[in-house]
Image 1: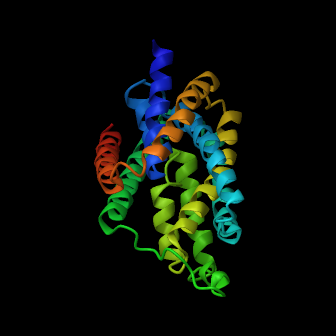
Image 2 (image 1 turned 90 degrees about the horizontal axis):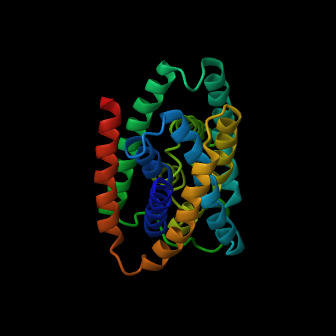
Image 3 (image 1 turned 90 degrees about the vertical axis):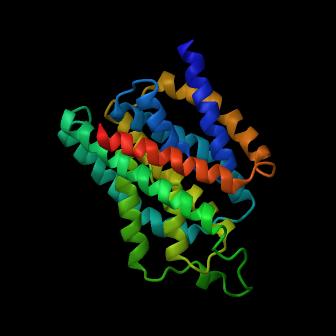
Length: 263
C-alpha cells in the first residue's frame, strides 16, 4: 500500500509539473517529509535525482526544437555548479544527518518554499511579462545579461539553495532569468531554466548519493508515477486556467514553507 502511495505522489507532482513547469522539488520534498516521514536530508537527495530525471526528457524535447539558449545555460551553470560542489563538500564535512545540519536544511527549505510561493504568485498575477519573441538580429543581445557577473552570482545562490533544499531551480530560476535577461522571450526563459536545472540537480543529486542521502527504491517509485503524470499534465494544460493552478500552488507552498520554518 505504501508503495502505491509513493507512485501516486509522483503522479500528482508530475501533473503539477506538466501543468505549470513548477513543483518538482518544491512539492515533492515537503510531501516526502510531511506525509511519509522521510528524513529531510534523504528527501532532498532523492528529490534532486527525481528532478534531474524528470527534467531530462523535457530538455531533450526543447533541444530538438532549438529553443534553448545554451549561452544562458552556461552562464548560470558557471555559478551554480561550483556552488553545488562547495555545498556538498560542506555537507560531507559536517555530516548530512547531523541534527544541526538537518535543522539548517528544514529552515532553508522553508525559506526557499516561501520564495518559490512568492515567485509563483507573482507570475500568476502579472501573467507573461517577458516578451514572447525577439526581433531578428537581436538574438545575441537578448542572451546577454545586464552584467556578466550577475548570472554567476545568482547561479551561485541558486546552486547552494538547490543542493541544500532541492528547491530553487523552478519558479525562482524563471524569475531570476526574467530579471537578468529582460529581452529574452518567455519560451526561451522557461527552456533555459529547465535545461540548466538538469546538470545542477544531477551534480547535486549524485553528490548526495555519494553521501548516502538517496533512497534508490523510493526514487524508482516516484519516477514510475511522475513520468505518466507529466504527460497527463502537459495535455491538460490548455484546458485548465494556468493562473488558477499557479495561485493555488503558491498558497500550498507558502503553507509548507511556514510549517518547515516552525519545525
